[in-house]
Length: 87
Image (cartoon, rainbow, N blue to C red; front, side, top):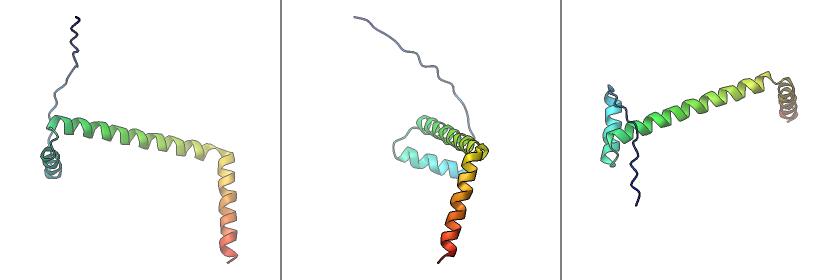
């Protein structure tokens, strides 16, 4: 029989919560989520949103720099405008 112990490093932090954050924390605690789990989830979700935003900004910048894509976008906009004006 092999016994393995896994040690997960844990860091303690302290935070100051405003009334809105306290109300949110109370709602989560009432739903059975521990304070630690609530904070961990919030941090991970915020980091994920921030990364998604950075990825979208990078994609938009790449598209903006793509001259062929910009030309096609202008052509489509012109076509759409001509169709709208024809009515």
